[in-house]
Length: 206
Image (cartoon, rainbow, N blue to C red; front, side, top):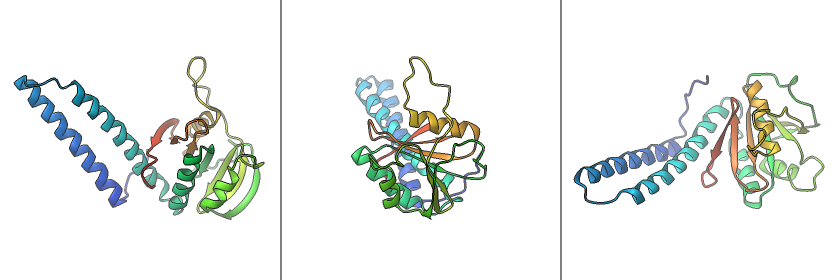
């Protein structure tokens, strides 16, 4: 389990304020029900929407915390996935942490260049020979592209999940790596950790 010890003050402050607002809204609804003054269904729907936003904001905050000890290029990573999301260019980015990944992946093409958002976006531009597969990030460098990750076998039958997401889950089921995913179909951004997927807000910087 990761020990969380990070700040990212503006995002943390915003997240805490959102949680306080939801708590206040819940208390107000309890009072309204006690006094029988109004129907709270519409209010509860708004609170549910707020919870979804909080979850996405929390995922963004904790992703920063998980990445910070292993790369200081998260502003570049953020810009790249935000830009790719806007134009719905699919992407799969692995951030290596403590575990070695050599035995888990089929290696792609060596890059060994400093991580920049423009380089990541160019790799995943449709038609680029390297756009299929995963980019491997080690510290502040892009080690390689077009890597093949192990696929999770958990999602079969009626559960629909794309190959990129299955690959992200597959690798993180077997290692401590973090994997960023941009959906080509929807533009949605998520990250995988410990075999679980978490949505990231597209309105907040990492």
